[in-house]
Length: 259
Image 1: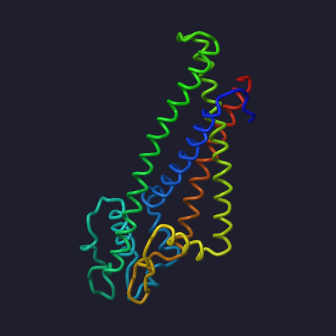
Image 2: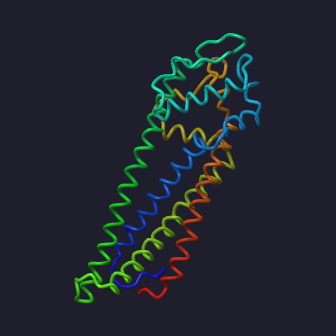
Image 3: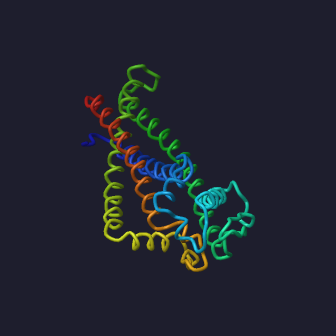
């Protein structure tokens, strides 16, 4: 992907478009696993027989219910977890402890923050796309000495625009794949260490450290479930990223004559 002539700012903008798009895909992949795949949590809990780890006897339906309530709260569709109850040892009572509710309030900030970041990145990408388009058009219009909307010029600009975005995306993908590979290797070596570092990055307190003797949330949300969620999220992200890479490759092939 050798860049000829001027237009380095356009390639830089395209690179950041690629980075931001891949971040958007990661956020969306996470939301897909948590919210959009039917019965994902039920399947996971049945797979690992989650209720057996709860302090006391609890049904699979109740485990799924409190998870649904927690996720609704984290995404902002539920205002409080005060009324979330589960039946344990035949007694129906509020499920979440005060410490768990404080931790989930932190999780809610992260979830909603990610949704806001995604919206901001979408708007930034739109702005960058306009900037790249008009930069290419202006530069080549000046080179040809004609500022009029010429069909041949617009066709060339469109092809150059597509090629620039494809190059930028592939460069961004390579950078993020290297980072993702390092994270995957770390997780394969010691997922507990990766899990702990994740929490240290995103939380500025120790509320996420729960006691399984008193905090049943940690008994329901087992590390094995988090590991599976990470695999699913990574797989969806990778499939989307590879699809866009194939499309970018096709664009580069069709615009190989653009100089």
